[in-house]
Length: 323
Length: 83
Image (spheres, each protein chain N blue to C red):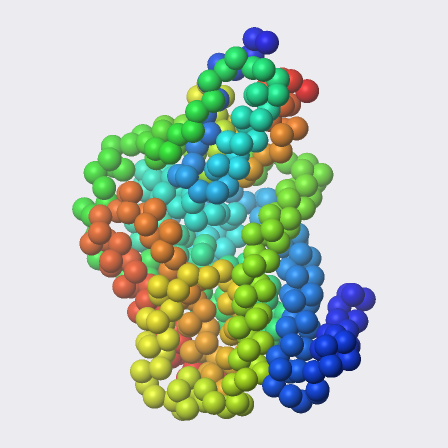
């Protein structure tokens, strides 16, 4: 926390005194924003990832599978979406996890709720939103992510899409795996947390720098309220679908998206529109979709992407209306 | 040296984390001059058969010993009974 307090004056000093960029100038503001955000975000990220990993070490995919076992549609979707947030999960595991869930009799819609919640509610994005906008926006992000996962999973379940799951999935017999979350010592949990912090920083620092760079550019060069007319609360009705569809092919990391989001909102974009943009970039990822192709037929993949997209658009509208 | 394990499988769909896991395992095996087969398996059928829901995973002779994370070399040595 002490390190936190020196960051702002230091960033001012670097940009205005060291680099000689005048206060209030475009380049001066952009550079100060950059040097303020980089250490702030990296500090916040390290602390929170550590905490989150310790919490997550108590959950596992095996445990989620057991908990969801006898659950029906509806309640099951809610539980699956919640477990999707806390269960440690990398998008590479989407396929084996899908088979494990479906094979143990968990309904397809409930499985989808889990698979949607896990990437949409990203822990890094949550940390960054909390650090930049406070707990209200962070809470809103979790609530909207849950809503998208529950609604999209429920709808996908209703559509009876089982026939579009590749044949071999139903024939596979899944062996009861060992539960890694059991019997870990605190030392092991802390060790995992330290490793997660290291891995996250190594993997994300480029995204963070680029994201903050783009954010800083917007901060310094885009005039205030320039975006209000297009992405603002009273902007045209098509602004939410437009930004969501534009965001689908973009694949970035949540860590890179949050600074961009902050800059967009600062320039007059409505928060709902901006959150929808971020969820679309982070939640629907091309690599994960390609991997799911191994177990799902194209029709189901298309429906999956379509339903999630529509759900994100609706959430964007809802928050623009509420806030 | 004769190892207690004859086949080590590294399971994962082919992402960076899985390759890193394979590298850790290979390094330990090479360093100890173990005469065992190290193989990478990307098939989901195999993962399902072993009960792997989170990758990367490591199995010794068909028994899963690590799942959902990249182990450290020291841990692999311990699992193999080398340390």
